[in-house]
Image (cartoon, rainbow, N blue to C red; front, side, top):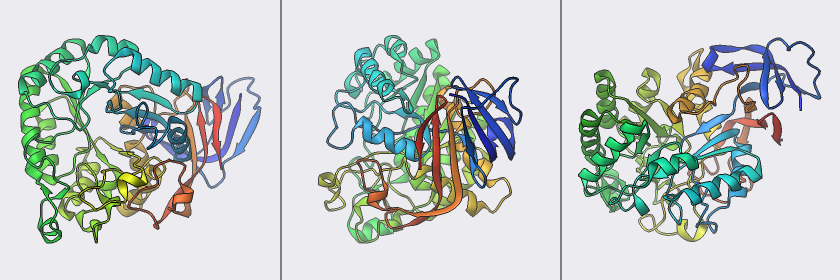
Length: 426
């Protein structure tokens, strides 16, 4: 199919473009920007007046719940949620059931995703067998099966020697290790940020030092091995300061934050709202402010949805017993636009789009997040000003829980294009 997207505001941070230009698509690729290639005749023209035309979003943490947790969500429901959210590339953690520690499981997941012919799905392989933190997986075989990196999800590696060996192996073969820094003992079992609010509510806490102690360990292992590490969902001001120093030192480290942490603090727990329970927990206002600053100065490389659909049986429980997580695929764009609006800068929109497209793709080592000629035609068209209310009925994800239920947000996806095909139109 040949598509002509006409009169849209083209925002492509990878190429420094933010102006009204036409976009031309042919054979699943970007065929022209601004000017049609010779002999181009469109099969379909999309009038994009008043809309932003941007690369499809790249999400660095989206749990699709398959295999093993289909009662929480299915690949079909979550891929549809991705389309409604303009997310065309998904990176999936390995904490499925069974764990993604064998090539056959990875191949099965990628095959299921290909059949649906919607978003590109890129799994992370388990760093250790069964995520038990003991024996290393066959990383080379998992890479051949389609894994783009290796992670432990939320499971700790209790033996630091095992993590050292994993990083040595990863360095040898050029793999990236994805780690969420949390000390395996301090704060383990906690459900909220350690602070006055948790104390008043009687909730067990996760102190900031749980994150910073783990970061110190990771950085020492990086210095010893030279391994490339991506730090997932950083939550604290102190953690970001350590990462800022590590980058200045020259360590090959990147990091992301969850989009919920970009806007909310532990005060949003309110009266034990289980929709506001996350891992890592929502932290204090100074931590949220530090995340904003880190996005502006480049310490924070990308923002992810941290999409974790949870069913009613596991969420409608007392705060301390409820499963952590929330739906995020359909909110990622709107919440990034809200952040851009808060910056009040002329380039706020471009900065926001970059953090969920080109910058995220660079971390994952994927040829995505750009509208360059020849790139895969993964495109989202959205109205940045149209306001919509976050309601259960508005969400395609099987997980209907989010602390933003009832909020009115600006920015609604109108069209999602994947591999040059119309995957979603509102």
